[in-house]
Image 1 (cartoon, rainbow, N blue to C red):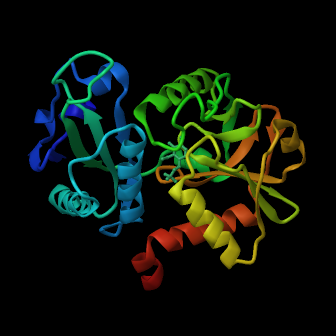
Image 2: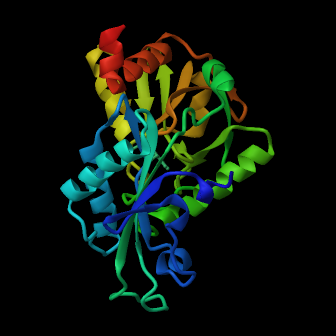
Length: 293
Ligand code: PMP
């Protein structure tokens, strides 16, 4: 079944519309000029994990792109929860998106209506579950995360995902699961839809998010590591350093914590720290399930 013909409902501009009827005009500014921002959230056991943080980031992403979302954080949260119930899922992926509409055509679109939609679907594992356990293979992307003077890198803006799709497609064409992107200075940045961590001598290393998304999962993982007494170092990481790293993993709302076995010519063995953080993350997002076990 094509994705635009699934069953259920999509919340669109304040109303629940049939999934297949949630349509926009072909002259939508968001389509032509990428004036759109979105979020990716996951529900576990009927609750959307860190819903407020995600919804606030959606508002902030829009502000950075120069527009105001016409629904408050509380209104979007209510709509997200209501839609989750209406869709009948307890565990699901939640995708809110806001974009400039089709009221006028051209680069300038000051008066175009700001539209908002939320879709929820089941997305069990972002990476192939079998590959996921032994560690996925990453290519090193040709395109780089841009200088923050070139693009508003703090915004989860649709336009920034052009680089991600190009990089992911190129990696997949070579048989890799994903790509690790460097930034414009040649430093390690992130994967195409997740942040990256390494383990060296029992310490956790991750790049400083100064030109890419400071993921909500990234911040959660840092908190979990600190709770375990694991030292976390945020600093610039050069790709050559990967030679001396023992473990590597990706983390993001969709990817959760995913071990990495290969990045280009560098290899890693998913080990105890990755395993511990995978388990701690599962317990963190599924408090009810963890408590019941
Ligand atoms: N970087 C990119 C490019 C992403 O798309 C995502 C997923 N939103 C992340 C990092 C991780 O962010 P989060 O943990 O907030 O999902």
